[in-house]
Image (cartoon, helix red, strand yellow):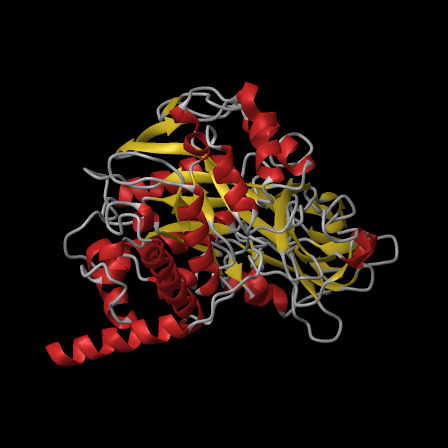
Length: 565
């Protein structure tokens, strides 16, 4: 077995050595800004953006949250949303995030918020309460804070997870993967990035001479020691970021060839993981841009690391970090040698409003510094299922149907002619479309409830069916495409469905008229309803039905009809 292992490592090394060195320029390179290194950075924002743009970088990663304990941490941005609860974590206010984003977007730079998930010394991935805290408090705050116009308070282009791992020992990826899946459900279409362990020992097997572990050995080592399985992670996230900092550290000394080979190995294995996962995940290794006792950075080490990363199949690199690189202009020059001039990624913007369940969406303000607006394409997620439409359209206004009343999150993905993309979202409020929201009838005297369903003119010609229940509204009935009808099916649901458009359920099935509404009634004479129903609540809700397939796209709110003596 020992001989086989040596042979596999030799073959891996040979394959990597044969990989051609690429002169391709990066279209996905970035730099990380950690404000805690200097304090509040508001006065330095213009300089950060200008230097990043001049180097041809495309994205700025900005640290927003540091975990300090179980369900504890520090919010490192100003609370512009005004909703942060200090029991969730202290506030440091090291940057006005919306201002930073607005300025970066104006120069064509995307901004990704960095969130530290776990920490050495705990909490670890088995702290499920902390996992919930990170998702329902921190991520929800950063991603789903909206202003009165429905725009995101923090128009981030993605969220990057740091320390999303164990810190040694013997573990499986199960709990890390669980966190990533739950995070994906929370953020929806927001791009997710993740820093992953890629130290020289994990790749170079302790020999530090570019005789690498086999891919299978590397994957097993990282999974067991850190709970990071690159393949399973690549199925969930959008950008895989191997932390290849040890290239120009004490491991390789000043040997530029070994540094380059190590980055080529890291990128090659990252690309293999993405390919095996069947993912379109981007690959951006992070490289060292700081000096300390463990190693140094020079323009030559940056060049070697960048060359190796690109030769191994990376989309670019991330310079780690800005404030340790800032005093060294030659480092920025070294980065610029490998980057296309100017930012390469588009910036997505979305306007929108609703009339009934019909939404008027407009992607016209989306931009790209590299491509004309006429060549940009937009695809939408209007039903909130986290998946964009298969087809795309030119930038401009479109009409889409939302998933029903309530606060709806609508996303747009803007893609340029080179396949590079950006995503943003907004919240659109849809008022009740089935009215009145509350009414009552009397067992003794009877009653007449007039119901109007008003989904809007965009739904003219669509069929509807009103359904009713005595068993409440939660959890409701689920249908395809994520449609949830707020009705718990019971005997009354079945009985009423068999009497649609017959008394007392007149107008309970039909088509939305050209004015965008339909009328129905619930009319009962006195002494017809059972006495046992006194004090009960009858709920009614409408289900949309396609005229050809009868598949639903949305459900209405529930109307409550109180039954009194």
